[in-house]
Image (tube, rainbow, N blue to C red; front, side, top):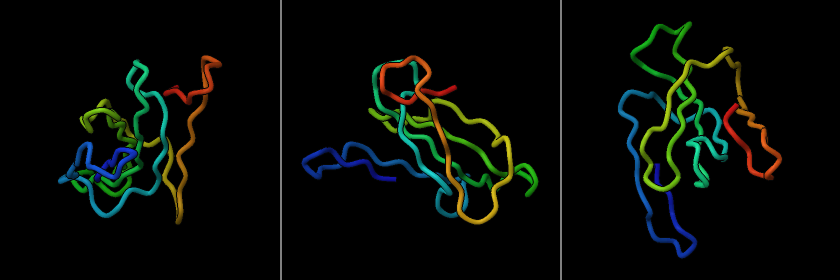
Length: 96
């Protein structure tokens, strides 16, 4: 993954050696407990059995470092969407 700034320059890059293919879904929100807008992805972990392989991974918007990684609560068929909510009424989506 490559994150660009508003001028088109690379802010950071991130490789996903344990995850197969491309993410199924990508959402933006405040997932690290600070004011930074972060990224959450739905990915397939190739090290887990097929019935347990979907993970939601959150990346820090400033550095690209992994903030957290949790199992998906459901299996997705075909195209998938992640959904986040604004839990504190500040107009920024949060991690539930």
